[in-house]
Image (cartoon, rainbow, N blue to C red; front, side, top):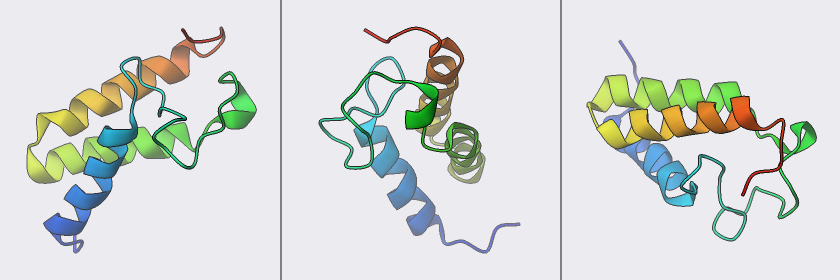
Length: 85
């Protein structure tokens, strides 16, 4: 059982969801931690940890937006061998 208050989990997960673009990458115009250059491996921001954290946020809260965001981020990560749209 997590000892992290649900309000804190939601605050962090909501922030990521608000930064995420439609194809999974955090939008460089909205997220202060993303470089505006093409997505290459050196620009990833701990993709597995972000996805796992969002899945954990879904498990803790039942908010499907977090699971959907994690799914989109994993797809982005796996497809990042080419420049995203």
